[in-house]
Length: 160
Image (cartoon, rainbow, N blue to C red; front, side):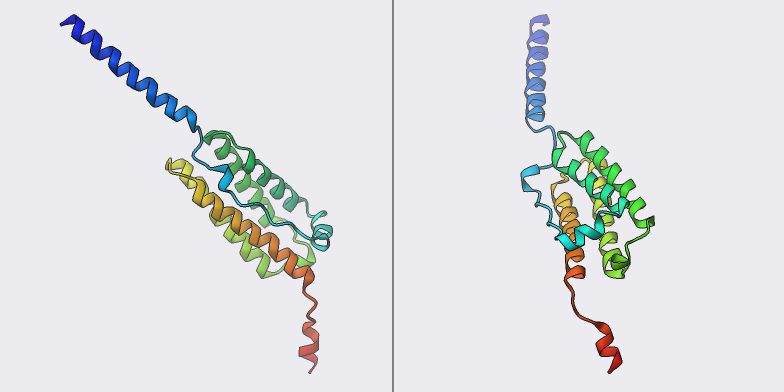
């Protein structure tokens, strides 16, 4: 009886070792290679954005997303992004970017940051929400490019 109990204990310990090695092989559920690259902001927009400290802090926080190694790191990066996004929303926008097109895209980015953060809390795969979050962030950055490249003068229509 003692021999059977020892064999069962040994075999159950062996299965646990295999389970932990499978978890160690993929310590984070986020697949970094699937994350899209960030959109480049053109020179005109960069000149305006360089003085907007809240945006620069928010932008720097996004760099950490591409360097996470485990779920705890991802959780810390997302918490930092949430804080930086709140500071960005409360900050003084540059005159050129103090429009609803920028603010609405910022709200969308906030939504996807919170969605990605929720995947960590519920222990689900964060890859798809992270991709959506970066795509929303790219839409915000692309909007900066659109605004500075827009040469349409509204006053021409209003005058006629």
